Amino acid sequence: MTVLQARQLSVALAGKTVVEDLDLTLSAGEITVLLGPNGAGKSTLLGGLAGELPITGELNFGGRPMTAWAPGALARQRGVMPQRVEVNFPLTVEEVVRLGRTGGDRRADEAILAEVLSALSLEGLRYRKMPTLSGGEQQRVQLARVLAQILDSQGPRLLLLDECTSALDPAHQQLALGLVRTLARTQGIAVLAIVHDLNLAAQFADRLVVLKAGRCVASGPAEEVLTPSMLASVYGYQARVERLAEGYSVIVPVAGAVQTAPVKPTCRQAS
Ligand SMILES: Nc1ncnc2c1ncn2[C@@H]1O[C@H](COP(=O)(O)OP(=O)(O)OP(=O)(O)O)[C@@H](O)[C@H]1O
Image 1 (spheres, helix red, strand yellow):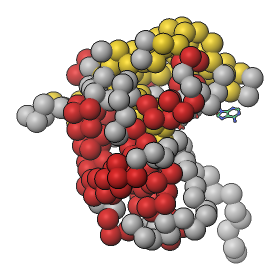
Image 2 (cartoon, helix red, strand yellow):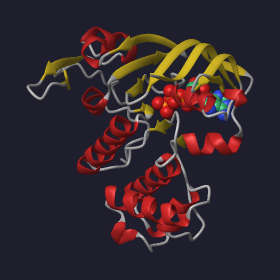
Image 3 (cartoon, rainbow, N blue to C red):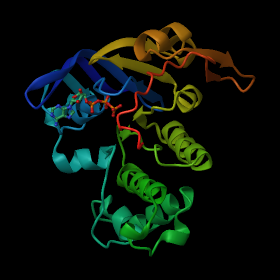
């Protein structure tokens, strides 16, 4: 089932069109990973889909134009995790996760709070103040907040995740993306996630969309899209793609392909 459909979508930033003419379909239960080099327009696209940046073109969510949705309803159906969230107020972990709840049924709020804290190994940090947490701990709290926002809603649901595992150690990356995948599958949530780690993308994506200079240059299943020629042409990255028995691929940099500029001494040597 299609949850989000964009046709000929363009997104502008500071008066400049950064993402251009993009067609995108996100389906219930699927994780679509958005790849592309730094500055390709990935966060800008997410900002456009999240309603934070001006767009042109067609954007439908749950079969209705995005603009037809009331803000309160959208908040229960669409969770957005930006790349950087700084919490400088002395809020506790549980207070931040509660921010994701729009209010209503208190018993449901408590149950969801306990569920997401447990699923992201945050129970022991529940009463800690945010500014005292490490970067990875804070990132897990932000993911918990976004999940708590939409978990018990009915109807079409969408998660937009901008590098939600960039600060996590490998075990917590597996925990977080494994949880997102399980929730997507069991609750029919459509997920669009920006992931720079190609191995995580290969492991967790049902579909990849590759952006370069604001345009989609490839899309499809990882085994079709993640090829040495795509990595070379899009990233200028020389790598092998090895298929594992587990059913996904790992990307291995080609030895000796790293180009480094010679470093010239800029300081005069002390004589
Ligand atoms: N506030 C801004 N004003 C003007 N240009 C901006 C602004 N923010 C970002 N840009 C530019 O827009 C382009 C796209 O940025 P965007 O953050 O969408 O890229 P990205 O693909 O998410 O990159 P990264 O992988 O580095 O996070 C970049 O060239 C960036 O320099």
